[in-house]
Image (cartoon, rainbow, N blue to C red):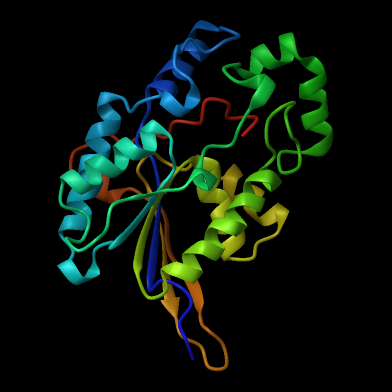
Length: 254
């Protein structure tokens, strides 16, 4: 029976970004707004984030050539593409891999009205939004002009259909964002709302962490992807790059 899934998928959250650093500064100062000039799509990696990406690339480079990623899919956001560049620069992608596939469906969850606000900023400036989120819950709440987790999942269903259609039996590396990592777990593992929110509550998806799936053939079906590891950062620690558990710019909304 035809194998419709890649033989292996690695889903990586981008390295620490300048936005993560700005968010920390805003929280420490008790500010309502996060002081960052760029659009979210243009926020770059921090120096530490670049070191994390290079460390991850060295981990991939230690694999035999025939086991390294040979398809790379990335969010269009600058921090994700810079993470890919760091991985490639360290030899972490197979030599026969084509150019990166930039897929807007892998972009960060959009915050709309709440962009660049801290939790205290939301409560002070848009208390009705804070109340609505509390009533609907994290999974279904959609900020004005933004997205819910369900909206992200909807576009990711389409992205995974593309992966299964075009990249069967390949070794696929996906570089994206915290909510994307979690929503892909929801899809691939057929989780419930409560199950994925329980995983989310255990802690942030770490910068440059690896979530890995391996294909397993099963009689009478086209096979399934099985979780091999989640939030794995030993590779970054071993390389001496600092590990960061930076929440997204809007932890409580994302």
